[in-house]
Amino acid sequence: MRRLLHLLLIPALLAVAVPAQAAPAFSVMTPADTVASRTDRRPLAGGVHDPAAGVTFISWSGVNADTYVQAYDHPSGAWTAPKLIAGGEADPHNYPTMVLADDGHLLIFRGMHNSRTVLSRAPAPHSLDGEWTHTELPEGDAASYPMPVKTARGTLVVFYRETTRELDPSAPTDFRPMKYLISRDNGRTWKNSVQSTGQEFAFGSKGRADHMDEVYVGQMRYEPGSFGRPERVHIVYTLAGGGPDQHVHDYYHRNIYYAWFNPASLRFHAADGRDLGTRIDDADQERYLKVAETPLERPAGLKSPDYIQQVGFGPDGKPFVLWFQFDGNGIPLDHVARWTGTAWERKQVASGLRTREIEPAGNGSWRVYATRDGLPDIESYLLTGLDWRAETVIRTPKPVQRVEVITGFRDPARILATGASSAREVSVADGDIYVAGKPN
Image (tube, rainbow, N blue to C red; front, side, top):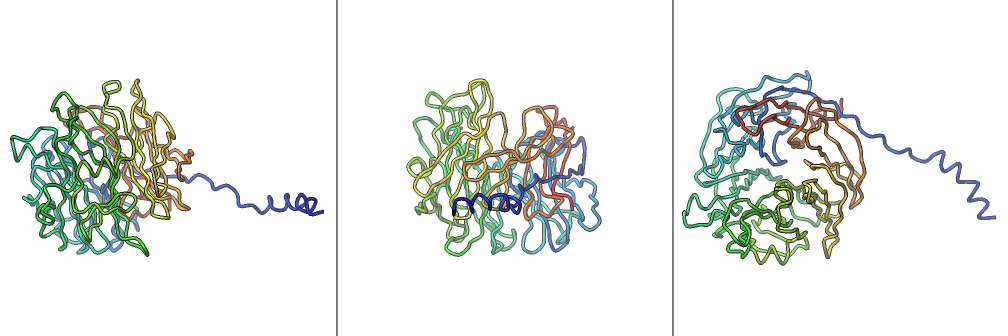
């Protein structure tokens, strides 16, 4: 009788079942066309929403890697014209990264490849207008790849990679560790990690037998503190260097590593919470931080893993990382690793995709934005644990080279997508600038 009642109830239960959620539709705006040059920017701090002004600000690299900014006014739905902020010295590494300081001023950081850190500051709060000031920060010397984070308290932390040979000619060309700058007064004064902790560098390695002593951080992600968890900057990175037989810059890539940084205490931690102090060295990263071991090889002449990886965390705070490496034919193979609490659980989830950026999608899932080489459009996928499924396609007229979720985004300005240029030389700038999101 109980079984019969259960069978009779099934049709009724199905009738009231919640239908499968439809894939979101994304609208695409083109704030500027045929203006973007090739850029090496990481998926971090490309734009920011200013709730006080009701405006979204974006930054991008134009011809000769010059820095441009634009603003989207949400009430009117209008974009400003591109505004030139500073020259890029014709180097695709000299890309801008943008934060909104707590005093309302926009700050743009550029690590002028291997040489210096330059801070550009907007003259008026909540606005791009007027003549910006440009300040070289001697604390950030020999810098590349600025990765700024603003904490809930307004502290600014800018990680950068130091090319030590520019300061010490005796250093091997493939010794390039990570350091950081820190400001607690909205970017007016700074200290670097050496001044703050006395450590030679913040994280990296020195003197490895395989010479893999360069750090390539793929992404950083700030997580505000919550009950039972301190604030954290999640970090995922790979190593580079010449390999065991030579000192050569960026010849090989190897392995995936994860750590988190507490900006209040200036201490690093492993996924299991182990306190590693104010510096991570090679012994730490090999024993506690390694997510995946990858071969020391160059499939189809490519560096593998790629320069860019993604990092996120679950509702329980456990981190995950996403990266791609190449097979023997140069096809990207997409991998996810999830920290279980005791170990990293790994899975290949796709192939042929260059994963560009991720964002929380609710219910413990993350949205992954990805592209395919030479093709237009951005594909989105939903990642829940190690489960991976296709979600939707964001239509772009031309191929895209970079995707960044805008800090504190407000739709329809959710992601900034930099169109691919037709040439590697930054003297050619014919990629489009796209901003996409869910339509209002």
